[in-house]
Structures are given as C-alpha cells and as structure tokens.
Amino acid sequence: MKQIIFVALILLTSKAFGFGGELHIRLTEEALLPYGFSPAVANQIGIANDHVDKMEPLNNPSHVDSETFEAASALMRSRLQQAAEFLLSGDLTKARDTFGYITHTVQDFFSHSNYVEIMPGEPIDLLNLTNPLPSVTCSKKDRRNGLTTGYFPDENTPAGKCSHQDLNKDGGMIYVPHYQAARYARKETARMYEKFEAQVLQLTANPEITKHLLHKFKDGDNAANVYNSDNGETARAMVKVYPNPQKKGEDVTVVFSSEQYCEDFQVDVIDLLGRIVGQGSPYLYKGPMDRNESRTITLNTYHLAPAMYLLRAEFRKCENNGEGNQVFKFIILD
View 1: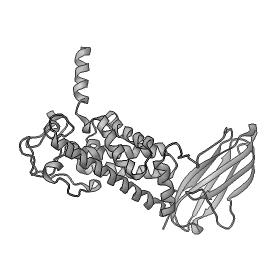
View 2 (view 1 turned 30 degrees about the vertical axis):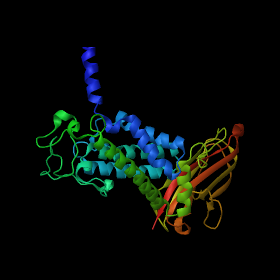
View 3 (view 1 turned 180 degrees about the vertical axis):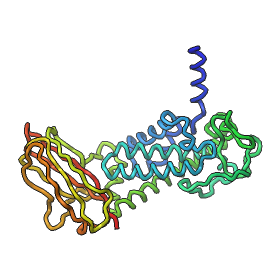
View 4 (view 1 turned 90 degrees about the horizontal axis):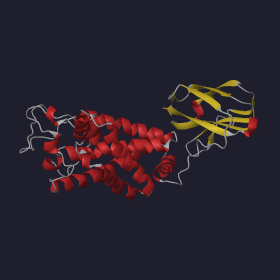
C-alpha cells in the first residue's frame, strides 16, 4: 500500500511545472540581472519562483492552468501590491520572495497557454487577462481557436478543451515551442519588474525615495535594513498608529510605551530616506520613559505631503544598557 501511495504522489507532482525549477530560476536571473540586480538577489527571487510549485501545486491561478486567466491576473496584481508594501516597510526578504512568486505565474502563462501558437510576440497584459469565451475550443491537433490554457489535472479536462499534457511547453519533445515560450517568459518577467518599479513609485509618490528603495531591493549584502536595526535590544518600544491610511489634514493618534526604564526615548516621523519630517518641532516626544509607561500624542498630518512615512521610536540608555528602535509605516492620502 505504501508503494501505491508513493507512486500516486509522484504522478500528482510531476505536472511538468512551468519549465521545471532549474529553468524557472535561470529565466528569472537572466531577466533581472540587466536591471542591476546582484547575482545573489536575482537567485533568491528565482528560488522563490521555483517554490511556488512546492507551496501551491494545486492552485491553478498560480500556474494559469485550467483557463484561470482572471484569477491569475488578480493574484499577480495582489502580490505586486504586497511586494511593494513589504519593500516600503523594510522587509526585503518578503518583498523579494513575493515578487518571485509573481514571476512564476508570469512564466507559466507562456508555458501552459497556446500564446506561442496564436499570437507569438504580440503584446499581452498579464495583469488584466480575461477568461476565454465558452466558444473557445482546443484539441491536441488544433490549438488555434482562441487563447486558452490546458486543464490540470488532465483527467478533469472538459470536452472540447486541452489538457495540461496536450498544451504545455515545459520541455520534453516540444522543442521549438518550448524555446519560444521560454524567450517570451524571460521578456515578460523583465516587464513585470518594470511594473513593480511603477507600483513602488505609486506608493511613495517620490522618485528619489523610489530609487533608494529599489537599490536596496536589488542589492545583496550591501542592502542593510536601516529602518529596523537594533544593537543588543533589551528594551522594547510599542507604537500604534491609528488609522492607516490617513487622510491629509486629519489627526493621527499615536500611542507608545516602553517595557523598561529608558533615560533617552525619542519618537519622530521620518521619510523613507530616514530624514526627520516635523510639524514645527523635530520630535513628537523626547525624554525619559519609566517602565511600562505609556503616552498618547496627536500627530496632525496637515504638515505631511501625501506619501508613505515611518513613525520611529528610538530608545537608548535603558536598563541593562539596552538600545534599539522600532518603526511603523503609515500612509497619508490626498
């Protein structure tokens, strides 16, 4: 019985996932390196791409299987937003991994559809795909009746449609279509990175900040996370900002406290380059904090341009020589 279960699992996971892991990684690296990515980061994003096959093997939109065009586009749009927000919040690992998940879906579109057969090289907006009409048919011998993808698992293929095995260009004996699909997948992966840049700029509304963040996103060992650093932290600030996002000109209530006594406790608002931005005074609060003491401050956003900001609490000279900082993002809208 154990042998039967093992074989069944092998068959289930051998769907020739988009090009296979090694090629997914290589296509991602080749697409990103010309944009100034370090080899280490390009490889990290490629590995995240490959992990989609392991994490979401049966989620058809992740692989654009079973004609799930609209769901796949929605998934990519959502992850594009998430990746940008992770970058703005300083979480480089999650930003890179999430962007890597997007590149998997991008590449699987070309590997699992009949794009190569019916519209090779034509522009395609992967973030706004629409599902095929019911009248679109497909067979192993006739794949040119409209844009479609194969159904997975193969045994779930409806009449008049192609199975995954019929249509995929993951490799094997397909040769020319396989290499065509890989070429388009590489090109569209690069375009998706450009869309990611635009998404970050939309959130920051500041080209200088965007350039700084994207440099961190693309760099490896030199991309230190300056916003959430700490040195032997033994005290902890707890800061809450309500609500998020916030309309410009409306008050933001800031609540903060310290778990230990700190002689030097400072709360301020900084932009994404680490520069203090104020409302008359450079700090929201500066002074000592007793153990478990809490304070509430009102921040008027009238002095802040629409953009993403960070509220930073720094604490030094705390009990046991503790020091560190905590940073929380908030967005000002028009």
